[in-house]
Length: 74
Image (tube, rainbow, N blue to C red; front, side, top):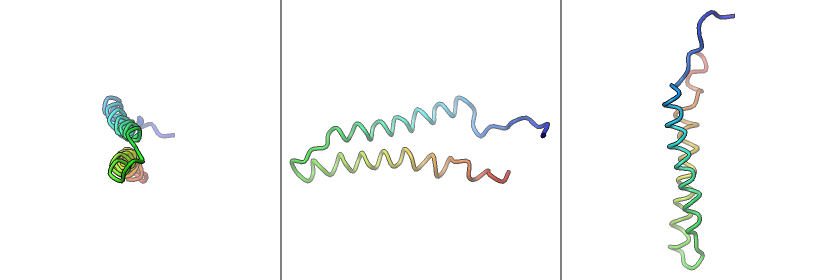
């Protein structure tokens, strides 16, 4: 067993702030789907694209840039 103490990636406050920011992005994407209408192309494309984009960013950014894969060997 190692005697060194556990070293965290982020502080608790930073983790909570990041969670709130990306969860708000995800909820914003879900909320934009409520404006989806099939009446015309513009009314169908804009909310759907915004919703998919926000949901994609809320999942892709934390998993790609803030994941633990960069520090697996340390």
